[in-house]
Image (cartoon, rainbow, N blue to C red; front, side, top):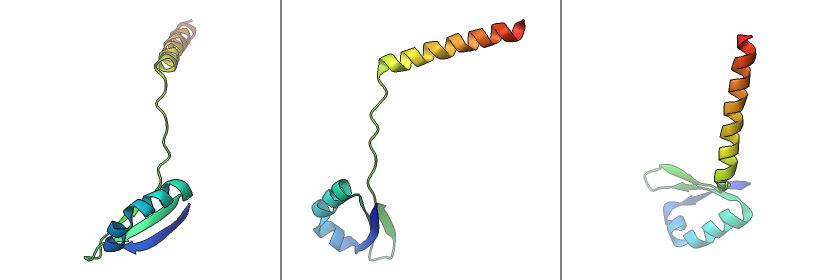
Length: 76
């Protein structure tokens, strides 16, 4: 990641499309400061695709079976 690069609120407004491109393509972080001295960060976010439904179901079935087997072993 590159940055954070400090810019004013006005600079961010004027160059938002460019800043978003750099954030996405070059992983640039920005610190945007308002005229009142408050700051926010604009940072790239790693997108994680959702887990497919079939894998969630398989995982849940495995968990249930594992717990049942564990309870049986613990009882004996």
